[in-house]
Image (cartoon, rainbow, N blue to C red):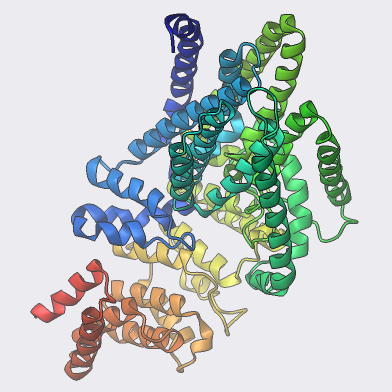
Length: 635
């Protein structure tokens, strides 16, 4: 870059620095916010890493959030735990810096797109439009939701892959292709996939970028025939392959919905409406509805349901319009943004049996939402240069408006209480929002009010398929936990409601039982009739050897609660049932070794030690499991 070009770039780059500083200032208060949902299940075990750093690789490669383990994301959490204070504030601060870095990549990506078509004021335009993405209120629930660093890293690496591809294309267009950029693009894509699997959408995004924006042309405007054939062949092959996979495995995909309260068909109909809602929440945010909890989103069960036909017809119209726009150069660039948005949503918002609505799914797709107005700007400013500056001024006003809304959202996210209040006000029929608010009330000793919101959560869960029906026993157990948190525990006649209506399956999920176990371990509820409660559970689960009463995980969780009260006989029996449901699980074998040792069953303990040693010799125990076994070998 010569001195004149450098001088011309200094102003826009200073503007980028100001934008990033402003974004940091807006987001910084959010570091005091709480943990949420998957933060506990995905990251809770990291609390023990500082005590046993030798287990580092077990944590990096042992995550079960996705089929590939998400080792790149977990590595960042592990290193953060080892080399920082381990506080939530530090983790959220790192998320903010990652958001700023990703925003810089969005700027870089948009600048490359604009420079490729010689749009005027391309650096200034890239800053403004990247700022709209960076400070959109819809992004708050990704940046300040700690575990969504996985989504952020996947988006970051996907953008890097696109950027490196565009650098390779710049050289190819000039007749000087540098293939190291293609290698870097592939490496970035692989890193993104191991951060979170949905980064695989980077492949169709690259193909769309070539077909719709670059249009397989060089700097002279001539088509690069081999690249055009290769790009279109890959697009066609991908479309045919995905269609064939869906046809062949449709029944198998439908079967995966057995644990959901909605079918594949119902999910597709509902996601059509949700995608429009995402779009509206990006451009015209209703801040009272923003947040993590959207389990009150109504399900569409047929095309006759309100909004379903309109939503599906709307997306079909978008696709038909996009196909028609492909007939001329500007039309392709106009179609690129919507197609980018849909392609980036193609995994999480289509056939996979995921939950219906999460705002963090828009982190990468939202880039497509800013590309659409960017394409309009580029076309207008190229033809009438005098409109370029006024258009950027208007977009800057949008940016300021977004900044104000995002600032207010961050202030709410900075407080656990404020966030719970806003969420339950914005989603009064959300089961999760009501549960969270019930917890807040319990923490200030408002027991009756907490139980009232717990009841609302229970009936909301029954009403909305997105929330999944709640087991009646889980509702009673939640009330046990809430009353204990409020220091006003349930009486025997209240907790004995557990199992009354569904004695064949007294509890449904383990999450609340784990909370109750933590309360017992911390002795947070000394006035509760723990022994009577344990007797009641034993009467429900241990009267006979009936493994249909619970899952293996539930029996294991019950054993951990019994262990908290040193009820070794009960704990032993719970684990025996767990192993009957899921034979040979190492965690349960180690637990059973502990209980047999406590009960003095030496022969059985030796048999368990021999089995576990054989597994260790075969390399089937991780470092933590080896250390636990060593405690008994040393004895």
